[in-house]
Length: 389
Ligand code: ATP
Image 1: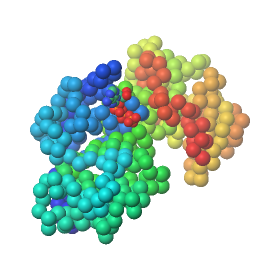
Image 2: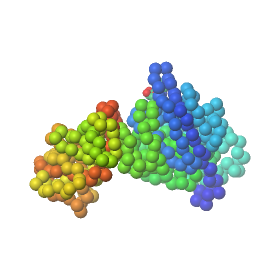
Image 3: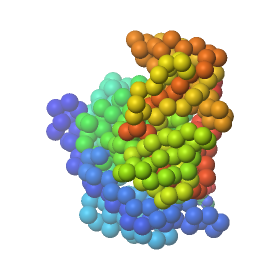
Image 4: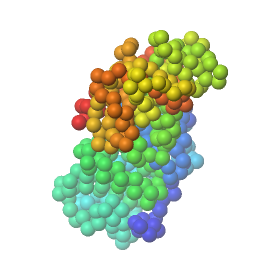
């Protein structure tokens, strides 16, 4: 038993999807998805609306049959097993609690179905309610609880029978921002304590960054990249992933090989980057805001760094520093973030030079045109920040 929760710590199962595809009458929702989730891992499926996250989760749960491909949980092929024989727990956005039952009866429900003896049931229900910090609330009805508390009950009901896999579909989607943030920390703690393998669906990149061991980024039914938050942030493999996770500036141009790196002609300027792409192909260099530095146009530029002339068009106070919106001569928008103790002194309207170290830029293929995500990425980073304030 876990000393912290009184629940027996579950052994997380390994989940493996191999070339899984789901075709509906008029669309392919999941297209050749292969993914391994390690035992006890917290994996988030992240992507814009309609990208195939829920369908993938429902295939793992057994609610939606895959059109082709294989699915193994804990080493057993399960695609022919019904949901209740897969040893999974499930939490949805809408809590799906039984309104006529008390909290304790709701949490006991899956134990009753599994014919757990009454005395043991009571112990397990209390332990699960303690785990979600609702000890002593067992006698209440769901309507007597807040939205956040109801979702905790749903979580308790999902972990009470110690499933080896816990699947969660936008479980915090109906809650306000503050409550979401506190429940994210609760879910992270519960994950540590119960030991099950968690697969969590969200379209909220911040939520994914807070919670996950690894994140699988979905777009158009396909996984674009799987990695830890820092791998995806520092080394995105596509413009889509770079745009979906965090803020970035994108400079576009044509590629010329240059030693073991590449040169990119951007108008009359040249930008260098690590990595190689085919000569003459359309490419982009992506730089995160904290790696862009801004200096007065008259100041000389250190040798070996990338430098482009720009104008400051926006200045946003962030408390911990400030964010600058910049525009290149061709209209490309960039965003730089400066720490409070390292302010450059430039102001809105100033002509400046934007500089960054060559190794801070990520060279990406841009041959398929703009692949910005259809959510916040379509707005300029500066505009996105402004509208949130
Ligand atoms: P959201 O964040 O909006 O829930 P999602 O990434 O979870 O989106 P899915 O719900 O998996 O996306 O849907 C993927 C695609 O499959 C969408 O184009 C959707 O319209 C389609 N789809 C999903 N379920 C069905 C269904 N039962 N019948 C037909 N098409 C469906």
